[in-house]
Length: 377
Ligand SMILES: [Zn+2]
Image (cartoon, protein in one colour):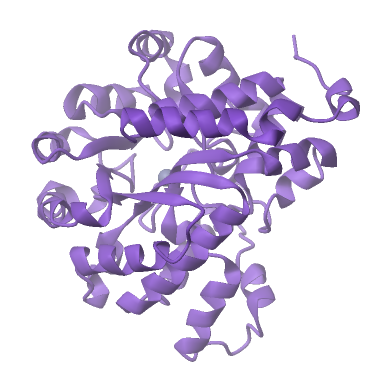
């Protein structure tokens, strides 16, 4: 969720940071280890929410504001949240250290190295140019700076998706979109619409999305996170996106779930993000199991992992430990994400083939850990 993010229905304390920290004490180590070894794909990740703490610390020091923090551990302390409003305050505070194009090169390289180390092979990552316009940063050179950092890491492919940010209205979004189109040669493949979903409904952005299609950009929309099914229906009907970001609250409308299943419109689910921001009361209440069982094409994603302390491996392990997903269903979720990606068809087949040939793919979690689980009734 970007800086201007939506307020959820209720405010709850967020979990502490640290890769898979949330998962580690809730699932057995063998299950988590298997998910870490698996080759993976992610379709809903905000670059600015995925910055490893040591890279962010470098920028804090660059701008001479390290007083009182002491080091990356001090940043981790700062990433403990009292509530959602506090999380937003910290997000805005963090973005103050992204001021120059070079900062984005540094951050993008660090994010890519972190993704590669997690065996995440392909990512479609949001960046929110509007959040940095105030620092005088323009879209095309910003995308170029990010691409320069990403290009330094060989083991992960990252396509960029520009978040047009609903809070600044359709006119600003339309202007940003034209600049985004100029950045397509830098691997910007699509656009999304994040921000305050409750206050800014999707319908006024219809012409912006029409123009995005004319520019041959792919489209997704954050919907059904901070607002209910009407926001998802509005997004589907007015914006005609190719995917829905979150889609969590679709489950409140059976007709909507039936529609999403019938048209196989991919949903970028972000389970632990939804727990952290209070969209759902707990992981056990997350509708991802129900949506998938109803035939909806769901994918699993981390949203802002360094702000929430989650990881893709941790999410996949928790789905098995808490929501009754089998190892084969986890493989299915990853293959569904390949299907839902915006890669060209030959690259999809190549990536799915590489997943299936990976030694961890067939191996599965060990018998001892698998024996302690089982589908919930
Ligand atoms: Zn998001």
